[in-house]
Image (cartoon, rainbow, N blue to C red; front, side, top):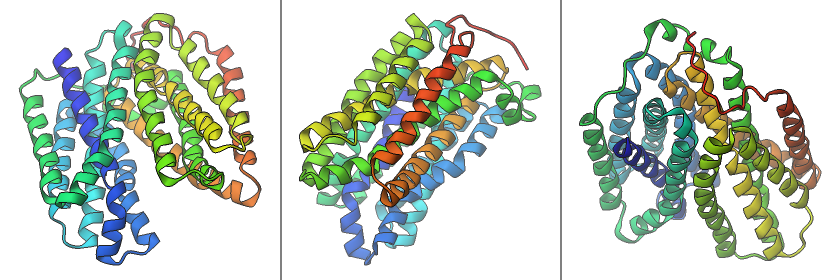
Length: 387
């Protein structure tokens, strides 16, 4: 079990590291290929587009072929796309390889996390998901460093090494015992079967709400910090600190999920994010706003681990592959971030920053109130049924 946790942690670290590595390279590629802001946006967003479009097929594949095969496909796509990105000589190839890597990442997350959770004892599930999420956040922190190395030395060597690492992880996965084969009877209409389960619907909403908040903060926070005089370095440091603190917090949130039940860390995260959303429009000093931004990002992130655990409980209750659950997680998280970023920025532009924050605060307050009627769905007692 420890070997599998290390393997899956390495997989999500490599995936998020390559995803975030392009950020410091954007100005270089924009100058090299004469990209407009829209062109740079396509390059930056092509991974996310592939990840969102790959989520539903990856969940379907996990229910039919199993978690390990889904993971192996994801790692193969990650290896090919990393090497392709390293040697791409045209912007269309850069966009295409990033898009392919997004599909590979969706398969790797669904397969790897599904495999890991399927073999994790129920009473350790929250801690296991928390550790894997902390590895993902470590990748977000390391990605810009990888991009800086690629900018200094050229992309060929560092990104090729990422591809080699993905291939080595695939070899390691092949050497591990395969998980149990999926139940084909439950896989005929997997998504329909999953959405009939209350825990799946609740877990998906509890992943979506923090994603909406994070997507909004990720856009409005930097703009507000800049308006208050913060430098680009200070703004970047704010979000790096938030990612680092959240990585540690995820581990503790996972342990609390197992020891106290799913509801306690969820309520703490929701209440803390609600408070941060109400405070975010108020600071008129950059350093104080930076503290609130960090708090909002970390507290919204705390909800993710217990929310994913609730969703996994529901998938198990429905007798489906856990990889399907993490495909749903990828879908709702990606959609939430996009909606939060686009709709939050548009609403703020038409009114003021306080308005989208207030709308989100109402969403979080309503969610907190609704949780009172779902005590049984948040209980730590395992429920094992088949569809």
